[in-house]
Length: 78
Image 1 (tube, rainbow, N blue to C red):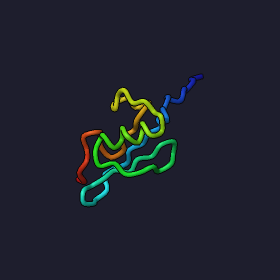
Image 2: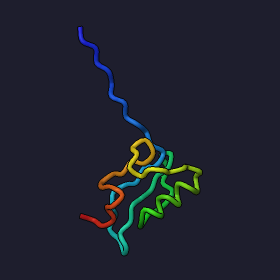
Image 3: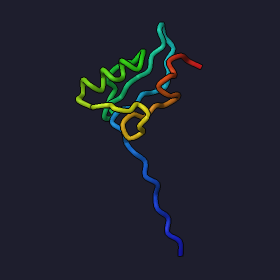
Image 4: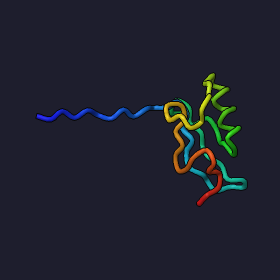
């Protein structure tokens, strides 16, 4: 008999969705599953987190921020 354990998948409070076309391009930011605004830079993501009282010490920590469709350096559409 084999036992299968489900892998741990974190649910970070902050989700930064893929780049949307615009002038300038932007990414939609969700906090706790709700859209809270648009980010044009990493600074915008940090400001949104601060507005909701979420400390972000490491933007690469998947338990804190999930980057969808790119990473913290992706700010232009492909």
